[in-house]
Image: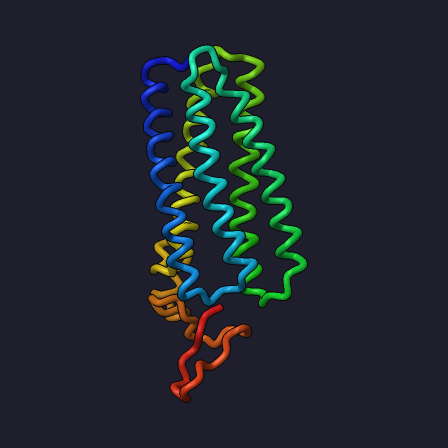
Length: 202
């Protein structure tokens, strides 16, 4: 059973993840109408967002059950997440996609591996020592990161302006427009029909 302060924290994380999971389905349905990226890439991003939200939701809810050790669900979801990321890496490696598209997916997969790896490590540590509050705090931090990753991937599906640091620097450096179009003609870009000379992102 979690202490009072952590009980409130995980209840909040569970509520947020449940709400965001519902909104993700809306984002996926909207993205299908104007999707420009490769179907496999789009499906992987959607699945990554869903897994991130389910991770936060499941660990939080199991942790709120009286008598449960939150280390067990954290360890299980950590293993699930690592397997998912590994499968995604294998799929992207076999995908006939431009290097720029692959690099973006490798960054996402690396973030997932790190997040779920840390979650697995602290879950196992908490199983071995249920009274160590610092492990509970670490798992809470990981779940918050999980929510943020899921939100970022859901926003990416909608096709909104990327608010990341590197994307902002690319816009400031004149490499990429605010609409995500490369200004320095990437190797995977093709002219849009109509003779306007515009470039359509992958």
